[in-house]
Length: 350
Ligand code: UT7
Image 1: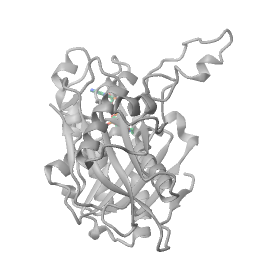
Image 2 (image 1 turned 135 degrees about the horizontal axis):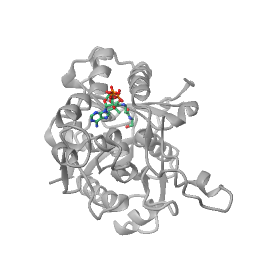
Image 3 (image 1 turned 60 degrees about the vertical axis):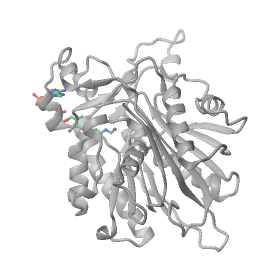
């Protein structure tokens, strides 16, 4: 694998950090059970539960990525009691349209005015990359507050007849409001580890629908399927190794040991991956949080959605040492650490 990039805390007195000020989440109302998938796919409830740990997932019906993002963003703004922010960052790999970016529409629909707004795409690691981007904007004083939303309607990216991927994914959105604060205060994003390995881009990719198709002789060919293709077994192994290594880098930066960690919020790709990460790190299972059983893999949304649900349920509490970690398409991975603040979460779910 390639090396990783560590973003270190700035040591000076005037340093600014991104501080978690509110969380939001949104799950679309339609719930698809394993039994419903078994009506059209050669699969079983037992296989899906035992191999992935999923019982059901929420699927957007008539709503697209920006629609979910607006709902989650509104929840986060309400949780933070914020009426305005200086920038909206939308993290997604299932954009409504190839062009333009969705963030400006999200900002407009939330009534936030003509503020800075742009999209970030980094597969399932996009939210951690978004946190790093927001931290950069805040710490260099370009903005004083950011609404960071991760939204994916990933069920539109899978071939409904592909039993391997169709059973994994669900739709959802999670959001955080980040405001400028001091690096030492609770809620400050204290350290990051980011990395990528483009040599393995084909392990998890959507071949059709992009400029490669458009470059075919005679213009857009549409010859490649616009659906996810995945070497699940290889990604599984790389994900466990990659997240454990990345968590280790973040812990070294903040000076915590594994027993210091109260909770890990990892990308929810597979319950067996979460269990393996916990075992490899030496963390008991209860400290590796999980919601995959009820929501499936919600791609970039999975970490902020779980953060919001866990905060709303009181599972994440002020003063706890929390590590976020992700691994996915790119390949790209990222981790971050923070001491959980006294913060509200609003989750709209059915
Ligand atoms: O979020 C982005 C990052 N993504 C990931 O991290 C995904 C990582 N990979 C995984 O989570 C797992 O590899 C999968 C869930 C994708 C697949 O689980 P697996 O245990 O690795 O299954 P497999 O691909 O090794 O397939 C095992 C068997 C195969 O049958 P044979 O060849 O042994 O007879 C498959 O054909 O399971 C079969 N199979 C199914 N059986 C029933 C595959 N999908 C299904 C299915 N129902 N839905």
